[in-house]
Image (tube, rainbow, N blue to C red; front, side):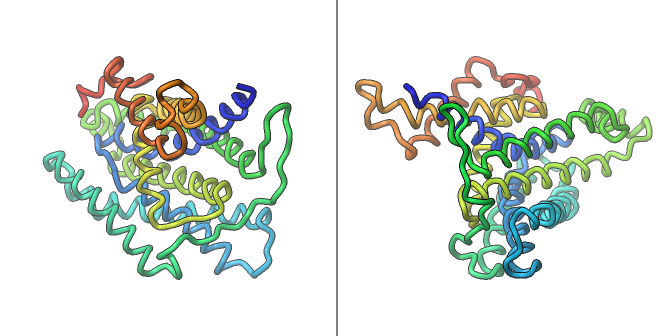
Length: 310
């Protein structure tokens, strides 16, 4: 059990990554009631965008620390471009259509984006090596953390603080809250709801790109399929925390990450459950947790009643 602090830290880091991606799901759902299953691919494209900046735009040998701001800007802009493009050309024409239509469109768009990257990005048919954010690791008590870990937890805290301030204090943030509560009344009060929806997609895209860069630093690669399972996990986190609630998305991500990590590390030590531990069962336990929470609290940890809004 002396590894428990390290496992909790690992879970917190993993959950922070889920939470950053889940913000995109929950903001879009909160405003337009759309489950954007292509958001996992926006995450993937953000990672490739950052890799493009480092590998093809900056001079060879550029320090990763020096390149980091440009990677965040480049990856974020490309992710925003695809997210906003999806809203404008794939989802907006279907606004008002039966809910199944945009849902199927999102799944189709997800598959299409995977194939676009696999076929047109250089050597993307296999994992591409992502630059390392330094090889150092640090001992903090019984914990071992790397530069990638520090970057992830720091950027997640900065992003969440910035988003909370933006939503609470800015005029656009208050307009987003009004649109989420009642889009028709918000429009009658002079709010440009189309602009608000575009901003929600853009913020979600940027957060996904940030998560993808953190993923690349932590795992050392990006690949065209990485958005599928990370997107599913992030969607699970959004539902777990209460879809439509930005704080719930981060909380759901952290709960999911910690539960998944602890299950992978310890469940095979329980008599009779030796075959159900390890990383291969992590996804199973993550979704078991989701089912359990939805049975006991259908609206999620901090959310509204999903049954009323789905």
